[in-house]
Length: 307
Image 1: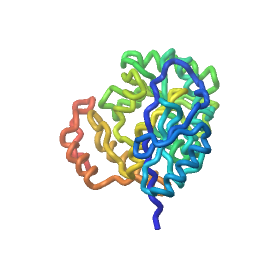
Image 2: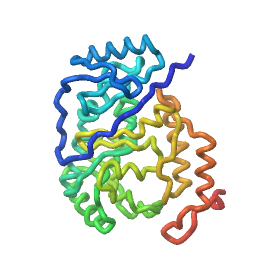
Image 3: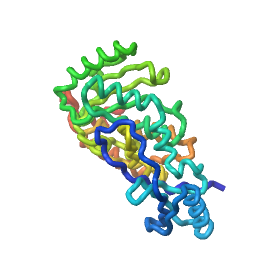
């Protein structure tokens, strides 16, 4: 018998405020929510978990959540979750993972820009709970006009050499597939504090907040971010339903979007939270390919280019 999929819903944290690497104070209370309605309050975290267990035994289909304090982040509870996960283990482990903190500090100091980590590095850390599952670190520079890309790349190269890192690729690589200029690939580097073989990709963005950055991601399952203090996990909605959903396919090279969707389906196929790319989503995406915007050299990217 297959086990039921946890009903995952994650409330957004506040956007960055410039305060770095601060752990919030311990909560004064835990609220227990049943289908979004507060049904109990406990002072002890373990008492709150016990209440959730009792409510689950009484009504196994209830959608239970824990809220830290009156305005704290809401986290899903499920009987198959480890206790720490229901209490926010994801957020705590992300804050404690040193390569995340050092990468944000390095990029902010080198560029003078606010920065966040977003996409797969945060998602995979949360879903697999294993840092070795991270393929690379995507670090976004907020509120950055395209004219700033080249000067920022120069600053980063100097900073990378200073810390003994490796400069791998520069901003011209992005012209290979760049249509939209909202989130723009800039440089790829290796830094001493990141695990071997896990490069850091620095991506400039017009987005002024973490939410604006991820709102332009193609797949909902990629909409995760961390700013050194708060964690955003809009993408948990897909893991709750088990289906990949399109978020922002506009102004994208749609064949690459489709390939990424197939990659995500394969990546999570053996995990506790598999994601299904449905035929309806594939057909919808294929229909959009006829309306693809022109590439930078003026060509139109259509289905006719498939071999």
